[in-house]
Image 1 (cartoon, rainbow, N blue to C red):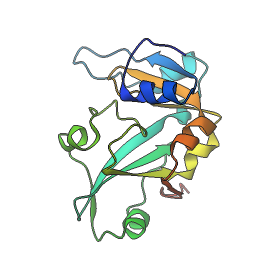
Image 2: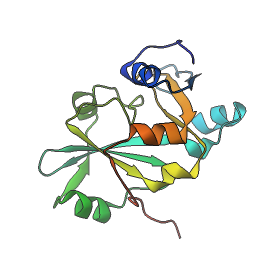
Image 3: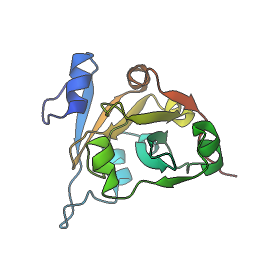
Length: 166
């Protein structure tokens, strides 16, 4: 375990005795994470498709929902609306993400979230032995065992929430 950074995510992982590696993501000049994350992960021997993206939505009811999805799949709006019993759903706006999750865009993890955020886990997460998640700190990601992450998702709904690419 590495203590290069501290966040609610690393604290949760340490409390649960989950081993993780910190991956530094160099920031571009405008202080945004580099766009070639896949290249960076490949250079570290990690599968670039094993990144678990944390996509934040807001339902018509005002409920914030985080979809944890790995690989290149895109959310299936119809399935999400039906599953959440929402008539309409939209992507959370840039300034709503930190308000809802406590983390800035680009660092949002799928765990260590406020209880007010409902978490959905796409089955694509299970396709990898090791996954990479947001660390809660911009410029850093965490690599950890998928089974350990799935254990931390206790209570989250798991299902097929992405469009199947033809």
